[in-house]
Length: 391
Image 1 (cartoon, rainbow, N blue to C red):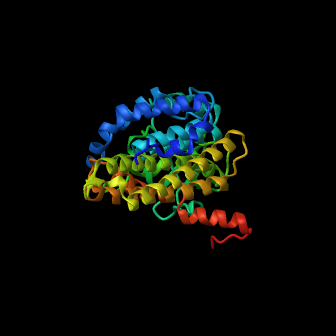
Image 2: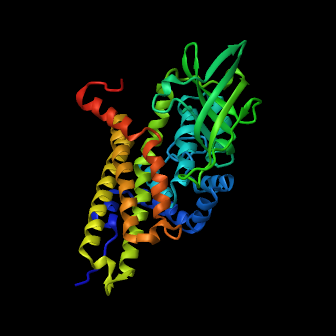
Image 3: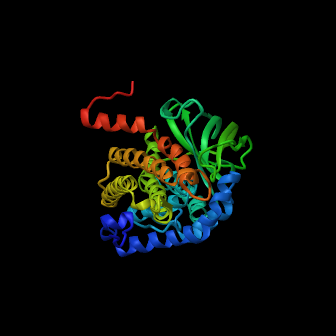
């Protein structure tokens, strides 16, 4: 006997936990992604190219760039609303959410949190509007999970700084107008605001990616880049600076990964209802329903976790280790959902006609960037045992 179907997240009624403003922001971003972005994603993914500047301007007009920051042209929304926006962006593509996440939670947040008033006024309004694109230079070819070992150096030369080194896997790098670069100095790790037209700075794009193809990924090369003393972020010394930014970005991923998972699950449900096999809809078979039920369960659990963390963040009570918990769970479950949904579509699931393989490939990157699953396991393990297992 057929009954009226419910959407996966409608089944757990997570909308009842949202404010009217949260829902309005989410629905606005969803409408933009559905109408303006999704029709182009397969082409961008296949060609491994995106109109980054055009997208940045559109996203600035939408108000999502640095949306959870206060002042300087930023929208000043709740953290929960920002998370919901990330979910809708990643329901389009992880690359789209990455553009927004790197812009707002890494580059803009670093300047907003640790920068001088002059740096904030110079960059944040333009970045919020999408008129200037930012990137964040922390990871190096040999230092990802262990950023404290970075080899990039900044040395004083009179009142100037000279930066030398390489950064790797930098989203937005080749199209950025400004890079926030972290480097070793005599007093510890410091951040620098580097206009990308500074002599000695270059950002060759990384090609032949099989994941995040609708995203710009680059190397940053700093060849004796000379900066004035005012380029240094004045309000933080040490690894706590870049890690505070990463925590902001990870929070967005907690929600974002669920967007990709939801898009996969909704696609698989629609396909299973339409696809007939052995003279009945694929959705009418017990094994198919078992898959869909398990995925609905995990998506709902992940969403409840994300919303709980969002409320804690809005109340100023969120611990960075709790963000690790959310990132570990939701990225891990999202990629499982993407892979399982692909099995429901069979051969059709590997084509760009459907988003499943694109999401699954993207989530391979999301699983390991902003902290690998293994690093987050160790963070949680240390929290519950009191013992550090990093070495």
